[in-house]
Image (cartoon, rainbow, N blue to C red; front, side, top):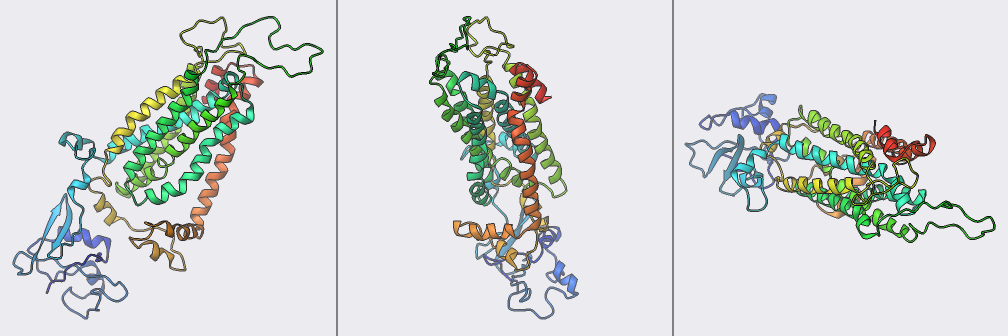
Length: 443
């Protein structure tokens, strides 16, 4: 008698689900399964435990209902993935409507041409390129310019640069934890939208402050011999409070970029073959590396233009009072991020064929001696915030994970300060303009 799948049933091996697809529908039911072939007993012979496969598995063995069977039920395929439906309403395959690309009810057939891993890789690479260009490129090239324009000190510029990392530290755990079980493309799309908003906020002070005007009298920057009060630059006096606007923009950058390098990599890994996943992830990170280089070069080019592009000035880029058009890159980058976020938001929870790749994938996770990995395999684990402390404890018991985190932290410590203040160091030590310093540092 055929055994029906209940709601909690699963296959004993991930390959068994694929073998069902290769088995003809009218085949005899006593075809040995992968588990039975291992033990040498046919499917309908030999002792059975109450659980169907044995007490050590606790699973129910699915059997194919043939066309001559009198029991209700049918076997069919959906895009090459086996789907077994019984009178109990159980189903092993997701509905096709959940794998359509679009926005809500708007899922035109022509849009499904982009519903592939390669197109998703293209959009994610573009987003990572923009993130690297804006945060790791433009920000570092304009530090000296905004210091001069808004009368900021070096430690205040450092706070602006570190606001990105502060936001990432605050949001990283929650976004990764809840986004891992949620709709990853939506998390990614909204993250790119927030990053675009941060770029627009960062460029806002240019449009809300008076035009930058510099007079060149003979006593510029000089104080009287008997003067005891400190000298102030009246042109920039009162503009230092805009540092909070820059910090807000950087904070939004950090919030928006958090899903990109956590959920983005996971989404690519889950929707392609295990043999192709390293290639996809490598291309993704390559785009992220090229972003900062493009940011330094483009940022240096924009700094050759005067910040008030509609005005003419006698200053030259070599003049210490020169302020370049630092805001152009953020406007362009923010607009591009807005355009990229829209297609990412239209992708489904999983791409077509992802379930087949998940069935073929074998777990390579670190097996804990206390058996905590069995708890993590529970489908309901991780959907509540109460499970978060236990998840963190499990990660702390994973040596490969800890050493990889330490390696990343060490690398970030070495590069963060150098990338932020490197152009400023070249500018002051070698008497270079802001544009030249940014270009040389990018090269």
